[in-house]
Structures are given as C-alpha cells and as structure tokens.
Length: 174
Image (cartoon, rainbow, N blue to C red):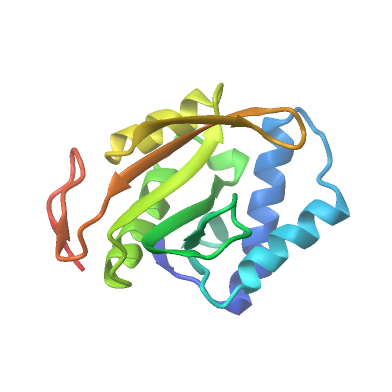
C-alpha cells in the first residue's frame, strides 16, 4: 500500500472511490450528475490538495483546501485547512486505509503551514467520527443541517506546522 500526494491524473480514480463509497453508504442511492460536477470542481480548485492510497488501484482518497467563511463561499480563513472528503472503496472498509490517507493529509497540511484543520461529518457517521477522534480531532460544538436535510457536526484540531502529535502515532516532521 502506497500513500502519496495525488495530482490531476488521479482525479477520475479518486472520484470513482468517492462515488462507490457514497453509494454503498447511502444504500445504493446514485450520485447525481450535478453532485459529481460540484465534487470535480472541488478537485480543480487551485488551493485543493489530494492524498491517495493505492496498491493495484486507488483505494482511498482525501481532499482538502483552505477553509472559507460563509460555509465555503466567503473569504479564506488564514491558517485554517478544510477537509472536504475522506473516502475508501467499500471493499476495503475497516482495513486502516482511511487512517493512512488522513495521516497523509495531516502531514501535507502541516507541510503547507496550516495552523489548524476542520471538517464536517454526519452526526450519525460513527465510523468516520472514530477515525477523526483517533487522529486528535474534537467536536467544535457546531452542528447544522445540509441542503438534503442531513444533520452534520464539525470536528477540528490544531496542527502546528513545526510538529504535531497524533494519539497512537510518533511525531512527524512537516
């Protein structure tokens, strides 16, 4: 298993992981063309960065970018990174790939000198919450409803680009 920084050539494979995982999680609900277009827009943002896990194919991915005020439509929040998505292909769920791509994303966010990082996840998504909490994320206290009516909760953690400590991991240099 190799975890690396992705590039534009990895977009289609990362989108395929994202779609397969969402559709499996949502009991086969097919991702709309509009939702896929919006995801592809996130991948093409100049401030976004992608981390992929691969063996014979891409099996995990994480995408992050600058945090923006106004639920993503406002100005950049200096020093703060937003995790847009972390997904693993369903046939590899529970094998530690999510942790590995998230660790790679945290390393890259530190290398880019972010001071803190945040994300939103479903309030009922216990698997994701366990992953984020295992990497030092804590609930910020913010919750909101999405446009589809799902309840989501925000997680955050400091980074400190000099070094960061993750529970269960040795220190990693930026």
